[in-house]
Image (cartoon, rainbow, N blue to C red; front, side, top):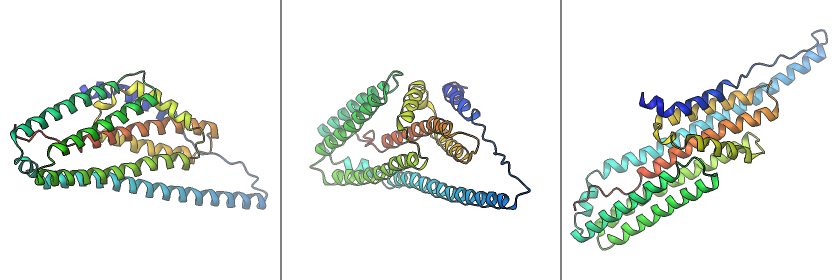
Length: 282
């Protein structure tokens, strides 16, 4: 019941968008008594079919790459967690009590500031630019936190080696997330959406409506919504009844939702990869 309440606004918004898109087949009127006209229509239909198959193949490849990239990031985190399940505690065991206390204080400060910034992101009246500035602040905070932890343990070879491996994981997954961001830009270009500002306008509107709701939605549901949007994109592209302007408007709406979902998933993944100092003895 709690999940239903938390996601009610999101479901309502998506239902409105999806049900408003009735993509039906276009009926072509041709003169069946004119063989040349019929042949021309056949050639046109064959060309459209070939183009549709090409687009579908590209979409399938794009989807496979996306799934493989997401799985690779999950596998990286799982391997690190398993391999270092007890190693972190051992690696940091040689630190002095004073250093451990400083690390705990640093962790608490980081979590408190991070929580404040995430709460600021729930503001329903933020512009996209203001949201990006808050995200940049979170990234800067993470870098400062990691640098401070490294400085505190710099004299301990085992702890430093552990953190170096942790950084390698973060760098690898960051590169994969950068690929995902580049793919989102490529999606806009592939769909030939010229008015990128329209997507950003919808994105700002939906973010402000869903700012409080989205953090409460599970990863699985966010991924399901993103996949649903991909299916809708294909149907809209294949429509022969929607005008170009109508297509662009609908695509802008649902792409903005997909970008919101995927950016939320990326933010959560980045949070998981932060250094967790809870296992260090005080």
